[in-house]
Length: 457
Image (cartoon, rainbow, N blue to C red; front, side, top):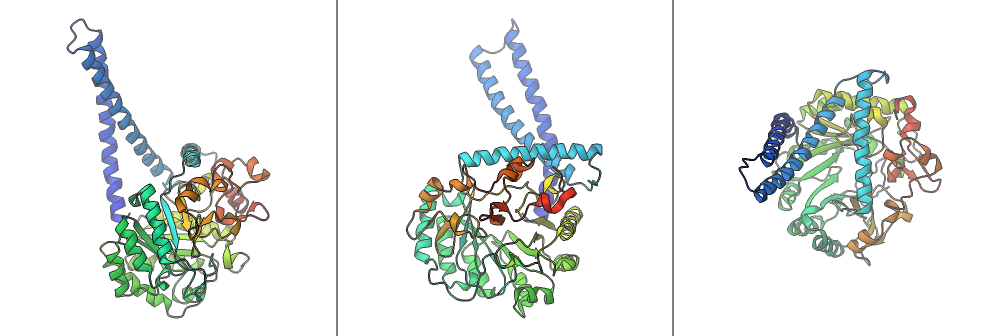
């Protein structure tokens, strides 16, 4: 959602909250009048009609109450997204906000249990290639320039998309095209034209260097709705981190080209915050505002892929706190939609402040992926081979989704005795799958251990 759309929606919500509260009162009053009529000797309606009216009122009340619950949630979010200082955990308002957050987190925990019982595929990653024209220091997939021998064919991808469409309906599953660099695949738009023809909505993640006017026309032809472009610092820092001289200017040109794409609903910049660019976040913010960017995702570099043991870029506690406080400050300013990544449970202090939704790892619950070699798994960042559930070259994706994935659901493996005893395990559940250490059976990033006193349970 773009910034102006979000602000308009918030204003409309304020009006709707009042309207629905008034409607609730009217329904309650009408129900009371019908009940009085039932007890009266001078009844105005027959018993059958009265019962029908009461049933209709009950249904209407249930509907209105459901919507009112959502509006109350928005009001709660407004409260704990205020500029309140959380340093004093004994402060009355702090306690109130923490109580509200726990209520929302409890609701998410129940939602997770529902997904475990009934997974719903709503997001599918298509990792169309591991080829890449950059060699980033933090790459979670350790991508390179060579074409892997086992790269999935367009025919196999189309066959699988048709299977998914027939079972779930293309309109119900959003496709995120990723890599590597997706634009290095010459038949990409042939695949996406087929997907769009079936009714799939789609977006992509890219380093932005290969976007040209011809690319824009292909985006338009295939109805691409969203794009996330990686930008990891100002010019010198970004090009050093990505190992591609001249890449910064290409990204700036790509942003200008994308502004003319009518099908695009979301143009997002994604920045992986690390020790080398943390000091540039403020200047990047100003630059992106001047560039007209409305959505910016800021996330920490995770210990996966090339960054696994790279102390030269991994953030420590102070670095993470600086990034968190920066994101919160910019969200309060309201000039741009700035948000944290979906990864990691952050504790009661930071949950709700840095993104619009509480932490939930949807791997295998509502998120699946087809990797570059055809393997069926969850998020492409989850690279452990022991987690692969099948391969579309020989397996039907729908069968695998519905009959496997147990290690992401009822037999979830991101847990140990220490985690189970933690007060936050109900909400964390071992944290994100992509940062779990499957050999040592522990999280590589436990935010409770990293943040210490700044992690409130």
